[in-house]
Length: 405
Ligand code: AMP
Ligand code: MG
Image 1 (cartoon, helix red, strand yellow):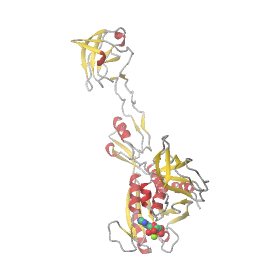
Image 2 (cartoon, protein in one colour; image 1 turned 60 degrees about the vertical axis):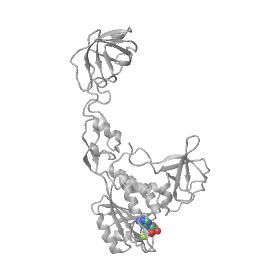
Image 3 (cartoon, protein in one colour; image 1 turned 180 degrees about the horizontal axis):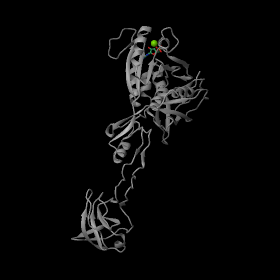
């Protein structure tokens, strides 16, 4: 059996980042930057006041109280023509450009106004106090956001401030999804006694969307060569085809043969993991094909492990996180066999604030109700020895979405 790490490496080797496209900055949230964003100006463009108060010369307020003539007013959006001479000051508001001659700001709370004079009662005479220097935030040409970053609301604000009305992001990967099985019906359709609702295609499409891809749901193919052959044609033009079901070794598991008949070169892997042993990967002409198991939990777990990183790679996303963190076990676990386990678990906080991961007592790979409630998967490496409650374990959080602010 193939390890999860080896399977991931083989799959990822088949993908390169997609080309970039230009989108308006107001449409760029959650997209992955393809070209870096550099500052197209200095911010602020000139030295500005950080407070409402008076622009002064620091030497004039060495001794307090100090009486200074007020020679004018400058507010954000205006430029003052006057110059502050010894013994003078200018009324100033937050964001206004520091007038010539002035080098510091005294806040209005430390002053009393007396007609054309201001009396500075208290405060320090630190040179440059409450002044934001030109380029204090960023300077022309400086890199603000590196390529490969998933754009957050904060990045959008920064790119806009750097004067980019649009940015170049990687095209969203088009991921075609095909469900297979004679027993499957779309949600809401009448169900015969031997029929079940097809949930995988819809769940996988949602996962693709959440990861930044464009999902193309090809619907359900029946377990016949003719229907599979017809349905596979719908994947033309996609960057990746994902199939679910029909990938085991039963006589009705025809997807492998249907793909091979169309000229696909496929590897059929038994991956040393639970849930989700059978996974298929290969190429149909230029179209990469990832075949996931039919069991609903296996489909979602294998998609999390293999499909999500493929989408990240196609997006050119640079991810620093490994996707896993450590937590304490809430219960004791038996020694593991040769397959890497992904145990559906809830995560809570202990009295000392540490994370505690507790697996559900049932780990059936058909139980969607439990994976939907799970906060994380506990990763149990092959041949892990028995572990007692409180021991540290690796977990993969499921509730950290692909979008963040
Ligand atoms: P298979 O790999 O086709 O043998 O399917 C394994 C199990 O997953 C069977 O119980 C199928 O009924 C179920 N299954 C297959 N495809 C889906 C699907 N799209 N949605 C929900 N369950 C499915
Ligand atoms: Mg089937």
